[in-house]
Length: 164
Image (cartoon, rainbow, N blue to C red; front, side, top):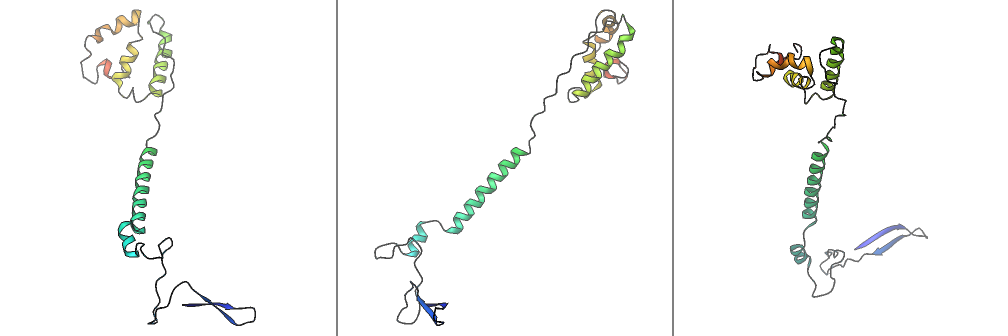
């Protein structure tokens, strides 16, 4: 096969012979792949295709591997890191002797409820938490209600933060 490279220094077209051979019948042979044996006794192109994976096989495996990696990395990325609620000082115990302190006690409890809504999603949890900080006269006031914690009536004191 002859390749024309374009005009030379003198303006004439230059010819370059390629590595391919021309057969006596006028057909050209296919150039050997890079790294293939050109001598006798080496594997033919057909034989090497049977023993080695094709480029298509390799590309399919790479595509499959990349898809798996992307799937695993996107699932890990979609899980947000666990949020740790900042700790807030527990309310001071309330004894009921100073009625003006009830407002401060309730506000301290509400601050904790708003800071950790997952743990205080129900009024019952809120009232039981606040009950644990009652002492003295206030504890005596709540005592009768503690004996009936299984009561599910929504108007029962431990089931309503507003009533508490």
